[in-house]
Image (cartoon, rainbow over all chains, first blue to last red; front, side, top):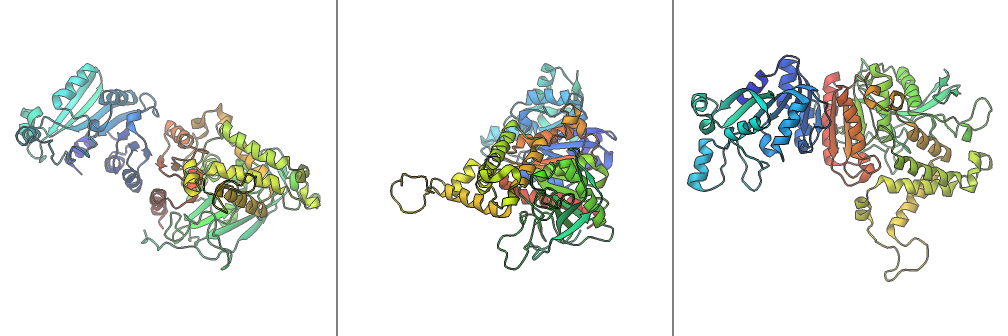
Length: 197
Length: 384
């Protein structure tokens, strides 16, 4: 499993009730069901992802998270997970709020747009950055709200969201030291555990 | 898991019947002294009887769900798209059973059967039956077949409602519930359509208060109108537009200025209506639409469907179709929502298709793929 997903899995406790927003092929939830005896649901909008999730034996609901989480009651989950999807939603601020309405804690991961390679790409080549975490060309990308580590933390402060823990991964997942020193520059992927303040 | 079978038809099938002497107490308070169920099976029941799937039929369906009754039969069973080797309900793995509901007119006890108490045809005297009554009657069929627990109970439309009722009433007797293009209850608009259909039948002079068997003059016009109306509601505007547009029959040029068939869509509806009259009984149509109207498992729980579903143990697969305005995605979503509210296992797919309600009978690629995938999961679980 991808190392960012390993970290996310490490934040989930045994028997947690989990909601995975944009669950893709359901791999993370399958892992959480098997290793953490977690229960819960994945939401997904992509038909291929839904079929793969069903093949993976998880509970998947075809759903557009831009339309909110009104299917779920307050505090219905221990964890609400949003991996690599924050940048693809219409209103990241409203979704974060919704996540912490239906869940006790939230887990959010996103590509850090201030990552040095992306800065370099734009500064030197003068073109929209692409990297292995951002593998789409500008005209076909589902990502509409890129943000940086600084932006995300500022938003959390504005929304009175408490950051429990932050992890930052550099591009090869092997040199987190630089990323720890100057996360906004050297972190390619940011991972957060959050809760209501 | 075995390799996927090549997709084909189940071939020539012989329907079967079984008679139950034990009386069946109905929701209406009346009692059927005994009853016959007509059914078909496809595939082989395995040694531990773990691979059986019950398919429930919709309003005008019957037990002929797949294959052909003879080499000459032109049209296969109603769910040919989904039942057979290599299809979602893969008969190289599963033993698929489809029963004709009681109240039907194709071999199960219904208005066209003889009432043993009078020696005459039941006709209009046949008691109204409900979805719950069907579940009770089908449970006895399961006993008869030696199936203690279905691997899945599946159905579309009214058949999906039966699958839902099975999960509520007999939770220990099914592993999975497959509910396609269904609803937890009819909308007022749906009941209204049913009422127009019933009025078309009941106001036909040949209906004779439902005792038409005595004279032999059946309410053909009324039943035809009911079916024409139903047919319109099962298609979408887009599907009709695509199929017929404003195409006209006969000589090109201007209108003929009369009320004969002029547009292709009129011809199609009349054909559908007329051919339905030849194979369906008016009293059965009345009874089936009423069973639809009455279905509302939440009603006994102050309208709270999640309470009605609280005892459910089967995981659900729910699917809807975007252009289905008779049982729209919002209706399926209500079932999903109630299952989520009570922490049940459920997967839901909303399939883009422009065929309207009838999409559940069609070989829509994404529908087939997601349905097949879910059933593979069921197959793995029961080890076939």
